[in-house]
Length: 380
Ligand SMILES: [Zn+2]
Image (cartoon, rainbow, N blue to C red; front, side):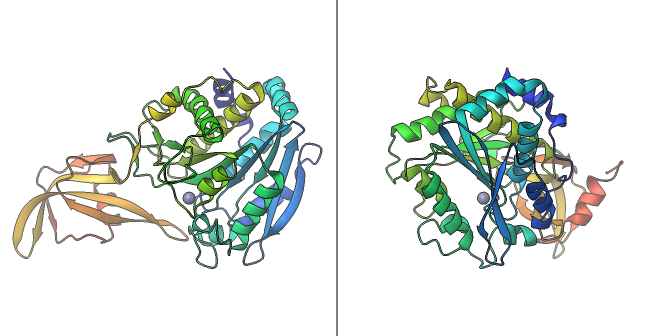
């Protein structure tokens, strides 16, 4: 199966210059302008609010047009990394040459990596205007959002891939399993009407979930399809482009999202191959609907269970949930919840069996608790 071959041979394609989440425009610039121009046509399509150049890389000569854009939110960099792996794949597919040729002959692919370079510079969601580009699809006051819609309209692609990262605390259903990859075929109206275009998004998602099932059983989620008037996915779907949202979530121990990147690489290429083989249109919408819905805030990074907390001279039992927060330069950990967290889960848990911790409150820095209980070989 193609997806298995992609996954097994991934190291041949992985872009070695992008190994963390906080790379910037200057890091990807040489990886765009120095590419093999026999394979990719590279065009400067515009600039961000702070004048960073935004590029489009085009490959293929087929009828089926597919537009893919990443990192509309500046701190959601996983799919950008996967794009560069995909570019390497198209340039040197190795034993997958036959499949690559099929994709290239059937499809024309348009990639826009890092749509929000100013946000990436600060490792923040919003652009330099402090606009959330994904709420600017109607007014188009951000140069980046304007650019995306302009090229959507020029290309008028059959498929659109809207690539994001979601909080790592989403679970796939109300379970302990993180939603490592989540999909959505966005609605184009508040009635969540089904039409042929949206149905194709769902069918292609089913192909991708089948491809990933071997690698992350239980860890695939479905994002809520509540219609958002001002979001890009919803509006691009409305224009008749079958749109697919992929949200890269958490995976145990994968802080820099290298595993999730590999899953993106696999899922996206599987989708492109499925379009070129036209083998997704028999998939059923009910298979899409059976993917568990994402549940927000079920997970924590860490939970300390059964802590005897002492405050104001009184002692009580509670669990302490800890979550990371991403700043421009690094992540910090904070106390996210205190109380009965027996219905929650964490990537890492420890039972403190009524060991005492003094004076703790929500929002407090928790780095010292992690060092003491999780980074210490003999914690309790
Ligand atoms: Zn996002």
